[in-house]
Image 1 (cartoon, rainbow, N blue to C red):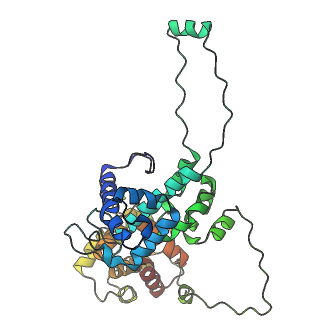
Image 2 (image 1 turned 120 degrees about the vertical axis):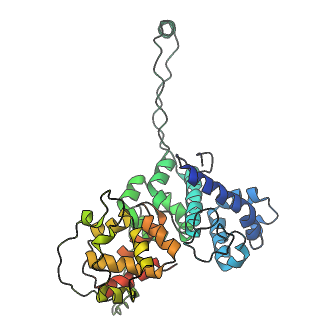
Image 3 (image 1 turned 90 degrees about the vertical axis):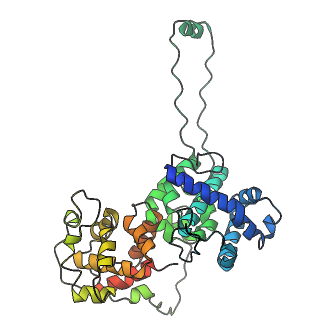
Length: 372
């Protein structure tokens, strides 16, 4: 994508450009034809025209997502993998090389960027007066002393906001929040960080960003205690303190992936296997864990402070609960990949910490990787 009208700006690797091309071709073709059966606003429109109309209308895009989820069987033609087999897992790769969750994120981002370009108002800077072209200017030009070229134009406010919030635009439920997102500044986005994905209403988002005063709450005379959520019901039992785990002890010499020798003694412990739901350690599981990259290990050990046993349970639980392709995607993900962001937001929300017991670690991870 090259940054033309309605497209996402910035340099993009070739493989992502090709994936985006295939996704757009599918959206403008079979997807729009299927949507037209249930969305009167785009019925009888050419695919490209229907696509542009949907992407330019936040309400209509939200309606299309709703129709897709309610009538998924009508989209079987595009929900296939490279071997043309039907795909039911939103984390499995489609024929374009991207998962359905990644395609959804691409659509949400593109719609948000279009909206920002139309609605985010630029602050006008005072214009410099035009300098007259007189005798002195002509003399300088004749001597080869031309004025330096003007500096390139700075990114627009819309582009700055999009660049700041892009990594947090992941889910279709965020589509109706795009108008509220457009009221944020890049500084607001930086301050809120991953919490943006936890704020599901315009009111909560704008209050959290300081753009709107919090509503006045009148305390009830006899308020009943709120029932604990399933996550809060998970027991968090204190554990024997262990020395902090050194990240470098867990990684290969080049720092790129998990060093299996660091966990080899733990993967056979009955407590670890029982908590993670793995009756025995197989060669296939060991091979899968050997592909775990630095980012996932760092996120669990350095960012959350887990020890080696907790790390082993988390990795085994994820590998046990996820389809192989989805676990491989998470294992190799970078910090900004949608899969990694979803995972870390889920485990942070569930309060996975060094105080979590091994069974709690397994339960939290299983919930975090469960398809939504």
